[in-house]
Structure formats: C-alpha cells, structure tokens
Length: 331
Figure (cartoon, rainbow, N blue to C red):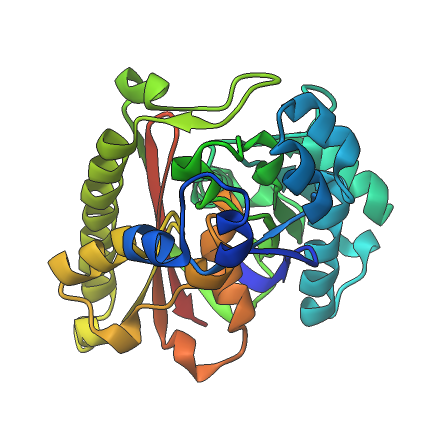
C-alpha cells in the first residue's frame, strides 16, 4: 500500500493562551504552557462567539461555526490532490472518520465527496483520535484487487464546537484541523505503508466521551497514563518491525509522530523510548489537539522535507479505548 500524498487545513481563527486567559476561567499562559505545552490552536468558531457565550450550548456552536466538517475536510483534500497530481474524478473511494461528525447520517465521507464532486462509494471508519491509523489498517487488510487505484482518507476535526470554555482543563487542549491522505494499493507514491496495527480495550470506553449534543469529557489522569503507555508500546512494535525489514539500518532512522494530545505527554514517551530530539516531530504546540487529524497533519506540514527522514512511526491513541500505528517508509 502506498501513501501518495497528504494534505492539511487549519481554519483562520486562532485561540492563543492570552485569549483563554481573558475568559476569566483561572488560567494563564504560564499555567497552560507548563501543563500541556500548547501556545495556540485554531477554531471554526468566531472568537466573539466564544468570548460572549463560552460555548454554553454545543448545539448552537454548529450554527455559529464558519465552516462545516465537510468544508474543512475538502480543503485538506484539495491540497492532497494537488500534491498527488490528481483530480477529484481520479478518486475511487472516500473514507472519513474522527471525533465529532456533523451528522449521524449520511456518512461524513459522503459530505466531503459532495463538496469535491467525487462520484464514488463513501463510508466512515471512526475510532476517535486513532481513526487515521485505524483507517490505514482496515484498508491495508482488504484484498488489493477490490480497492480502486486511489482512496481518499479524510479526518475532518472541528471539536472546539464540543468544548466547554468554562472548563480550563479541556479548553486549553483542543484545536480544529483536518487532514487528507491519498492511498493506493498499486500506484506508487513517495511512501510505502509497510506495517499497521490496531488494538483496543473497550472496558475503558467511558474514559473519553463526546455525548450527542454534549461536551467533550475525559478522566484526565487515567487517560494520560493510558496514552503514554500505549503510545510507547506502539512505537516499540513499529521500531521492531522496521529493524526486521531493514536489518542493516539503525533505529535512529525512524522518526516518531505521536497523537498530538499534548506536548508534555509526547515528551514523556520520547524520553521513555529514548527517541532523539531530531527524530521527534510535532505541531501540537501551535495547533492544539486536532484529534485524528493531528498526526497526519504533522507529516503533511513537512511533506517533501528531509526532516521526515527515511521512515516514520505514526503512533496514535484514542477513545474506545483504542491504539493504532502505521510504519511509513520511503518508496
């Protein structure tokens, strides 16, 4: 399976730490930076709406949002298509998934395809923040001859609409962003997907939730422990597979891209797994937690750059509880 291109999109409105401090919820730039390492994040909501209402009714946020999931997802897809040298008509399937879809039905993938004028089968594969690698795992598990030449995988994430801006523990985390990947079982791209994995523990399903018409909630300490442990496990598994496939190469050739939950969590994983500073890339410090779009957007922002290295271990965790990974190697 090949990764032919990635694209990303972040809405124009920026929530910096000074703005959050101005809401009068007992937070400061120093408090936020010390705990999560995030300085700014994007939102589809007008800043005036957040300032005036603190998102008192998440249902109203759908109306207040300046862009829908389909629109932000389509913007990321346009960049991916441009990078791959493809047109919407070249796409034979659309897959979407993430944390907070706009509708129960139709599938989010249908809405993205509608905006892009793509005529192809569409479906959602959602596993919260781990959706991107779960989608790659499912596609990689399918019979190649049953897949079209190009599959568009989109993660449209606009979760600031389900954030309570009176809750300083959660509102400092979330930002909006979308990613899009073009995958092919036969058309060679710059990256090969050489290994994927997907695991879960449904007994932890209540630890991270977004109820319908409600706010994001999580059991913070338990989720942090889970994220650190499982991210490290995924990296270890992908590193082992990388060395098995490349016995003459060093582990230093592997770049770590984790779920962009918060920078402090990622730093603990980096330390425990003994990952060198220049082999850890991220964007959570200036984008916030953009859910399933986080890890792929890190790669997309550096698309074509030497900083990505020769191989990438994408290690993600999400509600469910679920954890997943993908090993990408230069083709």
